[in-house]
Length: 280
Image (cartoon, rainbow, N blue to C red; front, top):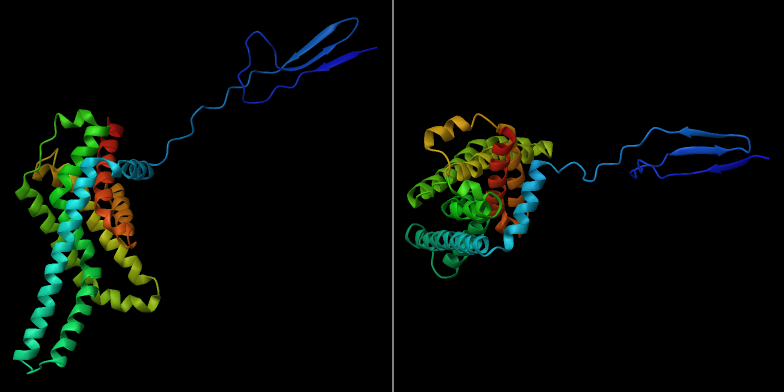
């Protein structure tokens, strides 16, 4: 009479070197072992997420830092102040023109002022991206420094604080490029409306390209001079484009668009140093 003993082991667990895996058959007259080849254990960690996802998650986690919150508060206040001044100037200017040029007064002038206010709200929506990025350009160095201090402390030793004059110049340049490019593309935006998606696609491509460059320059300015930055723009275009597309997407989401410039600057910092580590 034969006695059969079957041992079943779960695949994926490490096998003790002193034991065998497989099937062991015992008989009265002899014992015969069938030994299976050892199975390598499954890797403990899965593949890391993509660079963009990593940068986004790390930036979200750091939104609660005091340094980042300070920049967020200052940039929001300055952005709102800029739009408030522009809206007030437009309303009072239209009322004054309505009275001096067209002889309107009273209710008619108030109606013209209300129309100007409506135009101002539309202008805020259209210009928010340009103004918000220009404003964050002024304070971007503080965001980049906070991210580097927490995640890339070795970069602090070689970083050079960006002078305020250069930050303002970069911010105004960002806003000017955004307004000029979108004005030039305005006829195409209107033509592509008939396609249903063409206008949105062109808007994202154009503004993603612009924003990716602007955010990347905010980080590079701490580590390169102007000539080196121009040379560096030829490398990593795809990553900058992805950064710009992600930032543009955040900027068109109501509510999220208020923190999008800060998130974009933080993400750009992670991508910049992540790329340097990969090349090393």
